[in-house]
Image (cartoon, rainbow, N blue to C red):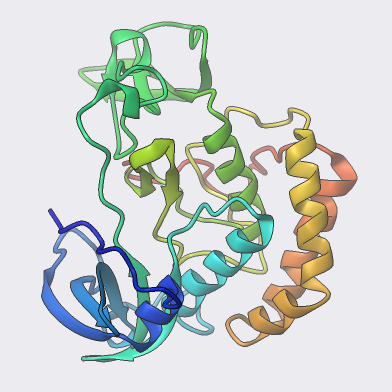
Length: 291
């Protein structure tokens, strides 16, 4: 769908490319509810594809009245970087052809080699794969998820039938589940999971995050109530420290003071409990539609 990113000249970072580069709009991604433009960006001999979401193309949301979706997308990237996990493609806030907006590096899908998929390319036990994360989410006609899978819950599949919604017991998804708990992601759908070459996995579309009220809504509930990994605890401790320093200063430019305080409280709460959060019952736990 897009040309591979060129080998960069020495000294030009991806953030610099996205921030300083010239944007050329190639087209619009029409499936999105807000304006999402596919662009080429070039700067000092380096070129790449990217996604540009202008603030002017955002639809107002009653429950996210402060700031912009673009600012929240950038804030999610900043938190991801502070964990050390690199779960969100490089994302910056900049001016573009249609005004200020979010600019994010385009991620090409992996090749057709089954080795690109963590489970060898098979769906959930041979049942129906769903969403954009190939091999990571599935609907299975069974009461238990099966080895290597985590149950999310039952889903209606038509004609009065239900199936078990499952996701892979995958460390990359588990990291995303922790990130989502920190940023209070209200919309973690299957289509927001992007497997990439080299076994990487990215999460995108973080415009409805950081609300001061608990709005966590995700397909990644498989570890709910389970003990956090040692790796996750270390990442959260890094976040707690960073939120008291440069990360906190940066987020204060992107989200409200109340939202920043709530983010600090969520990190502290996760460290105090030592466990993945569970659905609160006060908010729909699974996004709709799930893909």
